[in-house]
Length: 110
Image (tube, rainbow, N blue to C red; front, side, top):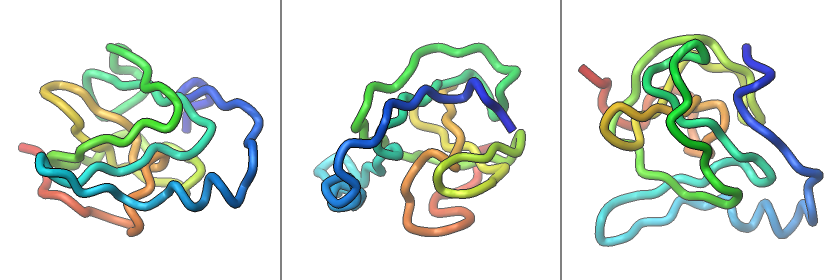
């Protein structure tokens, strides 16, 4: 569990935030929303001990290319050991991503 995995600002309107949770499908694939009001750290591997490479801005939607088990993290969508690969060598804790499901929604990373 990580207290430094994200930063959060007070939620604005809950109803408006909930309406924005749907995954977005574009020509380049499906993109999943980060929990409203959170800026999530992107790391080089599946755990909080890995180096932070950037922090996602508020209201970001991300692709998930594959998923990998790693450190267990608690976030707004529960507690999970899944980490989502969003780019080459870049992972975010799945507990901060609204995928609409518990468990894997993408292939396992090699």
